[in-house]
Image (cartoon, rainbow, N blue to C red; front, side, top):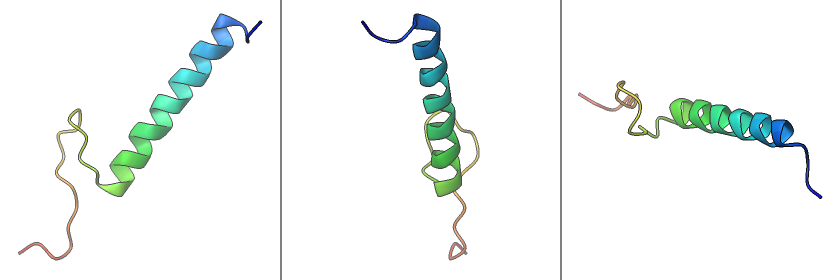
Length: 43
């Protein structure tokens, strides 16, 4: 038997949040974000 459903839901929420945070920091430009990726070499 696996973990309690609430534990699984919390893990999923944390995983999604961390993924979004890392994508934003890396400048991946996920479809959900409105800010363009930072590029120091852009004119």
